[in-house]
View 1 (cartoon, one colour):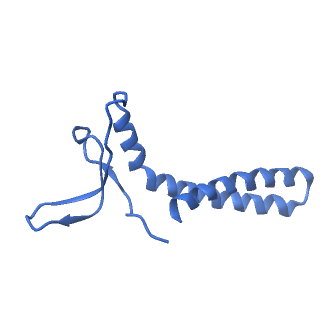
View 2 (view 1 turned 30 degrees about the horizontal axis):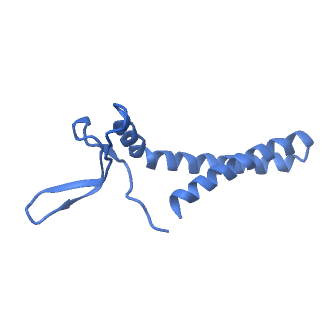
Length: 113
């Protein structure tokens, strides 16, 4: 599985639109350097602020992925605990946890595979 650039990521500034920074600084032969991961580019049809909103969403992607992984693992633990109780009520709770964990795991797979 390829690894993404570890966080934290940051938005360079509103002035630059959607430059997402993170990871090691790459230095070029002219002595300049930058830790740019991606640049969000806008289009004429975008409403004001949409480019910046897209960039902010990308910046938090590593945090969202980590949180989703933790949530999925927690749901799987709760699922196992509820199944171990063996009651109808606990089986229903286990199923709710399992369905939600499976949705999270599918999203995680999209980001990591």
